[in-house]
View 1 (cartoon, rainbow, N blue to C red):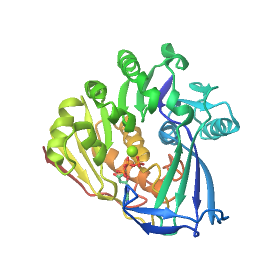
View 2: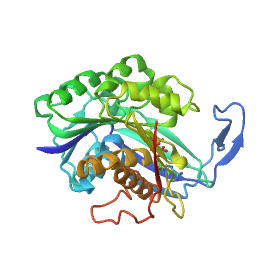
View 3: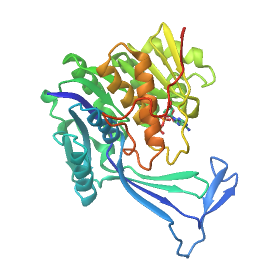
View 4: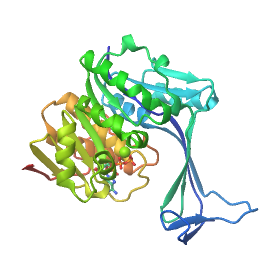
Length: 329
Ligand SMILES: Nc1ncnc2c1ncn2[C@@H]1O[C@H](COP(=O)(O)OP(=O)(O)OP(=O)(O)O)[C@@H](O)[C@H]1O
Ligand SMILES: [Mg+2]
């Protein structure tokens, strides 16, 4: 039997950095700033790194690193990139029993393009991960202690009601980190939040899910605590994290580190780290926050979303001890 299932995307990630790209401010860019390069020219990529990512893979790797038996539920394309992802997963000791192949779509792919300043743009090909089909899941075998649900993108969203019901029926605990498709289909998602023992969102996502402006943190927590049966985790990037159980709120900042190399996968590392710690010490929220932060910090200090995740023998206080405040809501 597995300790945990993760479900979500499996992505081939290529990171590249170029000094030949010009930074420009301009109202034509939605964010007010853009990266420009000349047409009809050959530009140099100064650094290229090839990795594997996606929510299902990233979070499963945390659990495997901690010695848990884990199976990611995900789909890859019928192509060499899909084969490569499977090879990397097998090496990380993830079970391939629940990995399916989509004959109609290529493997999901991200090109993560950085400027010399560290600013970045992600080119994303949706691919097979957008089409995870209920028929590819061996439903009768879905039994473990925990289910970790990542962004179920595009058509994969339709799996959610059956997935959550099946998991609850077989006594699994559910952690849920919803993604953009879930926020686009918020009306369907809100009633399903009652299935979550732990709901993990960042500040913007919490605002999207509740429809409350993200500056009104108290109101957001009250709303989410009403909807989610268990804990609500709100990550706040460089401002740390807040965790609520509906009665108490735990707040923490971040761990000090020399330099952020790449922020891809920080959220996945935090959420999966929190659950891995709870699996070991179910009632120790402070330990879970410390472990999750160290797991995220590890990822921030290395390229790629799987590298830097804590290993079982790593020192929990490698980057120091977080100060955690506990107050009543
Ligand atoms: N710039 C940073 N400095 C220090 N720690 C950080 C930074 N960014 C993120 N973290 C750590 O990682 C956690 C999760 O980060 P964040 O809130 O950015 O998640 P996210 O928005 O879900 O990220 P992702 O884009 O990976 O989904 C934070 O709570 C914090 O502990
Ligand atoms: Mg996230």
